[in-house]
Image 1 (cartoon, rainbow, N blue to C red):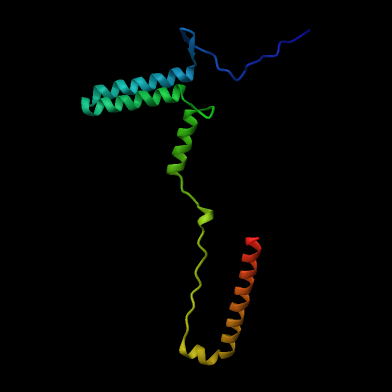
Image 2: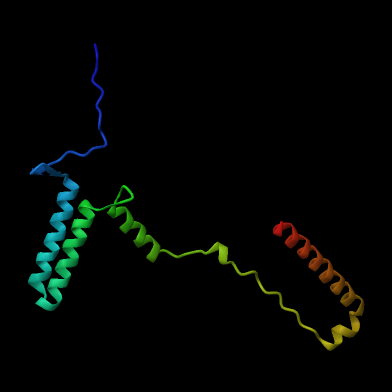
Length: 139
């Protein structure tokens, strides 16, 4: 007994078809909400505010229903834009190293004369290591 394997399972069913163009439930709902929002905007607000709100609502509903960017639905990009603007950002590439505080006291200079020469020797070795690393990176 042979069983038919369903094909095209990723294609959604068309519920309304007009002149060879069909729309799915999601598209119908997006258009309904867009036009409904536009209708409510014109009934609640005066013409100066209602008409621009109606246009924004209708265009947004149409873009959500039919818009595709890089073969992805427009609603995907709206979600990504929402997360970008309303979630905190961490810029790792702009990380600022912590500053080291160096304070010199007159008493510390007199008592730690030997340490001071060690610090300058350490600073010189660090500077030499950094220049070696810079030369390696420039190659």
